[in-house]
Length: 188
Image 1 (cartoon, rainbow, N blue to C red):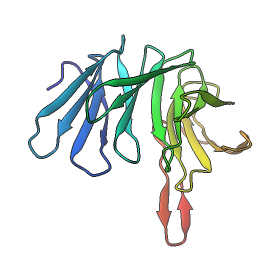
Image 2 (image 1 turned 180 degrees about the vertical axis):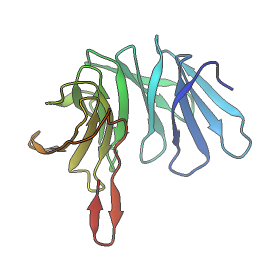
Image 3 (image 1 turned 30 degrees about the vertical axis):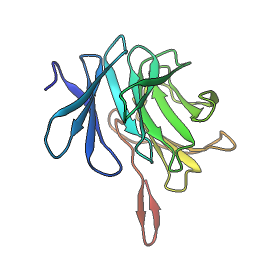
């Protein structure tokens, strides 16, 4: 088990692992079949809020209150890279559908897009007035939705970095956003 709260979990794409993160500053990889811990990944210096598997399932990204994103090798448990650039806690992480980018939402009120080949920040999306608590790529990968404690959801075009729409009217924080593909189109 974990000591302290688990803040986020993610299933591996093939469904054989679960990653969990939490107050104890670790990322834990679990075997779904046995329920046993495969790895305890240490390196964050503060609480970990978010975790996401790459589409291939070979890497995970974790985001922390320590303002860093850490990329981990799922097979070995080794740290691959630390991404830094946010000035606040990382509350949400998502890989693009093709695995070429990672989006991160932060307490610094921004969404950052990271190139997974160069590990560099390629875009900073600004406009929220409070913490960005959730990010999600559209199924096509061309847009990102971001939810914030400013009680809005913003829809962004990745190429132009423009905010395409602001959805407001929520009574409280927006802590989660997700896309859904249907036969009739895409829904947010």
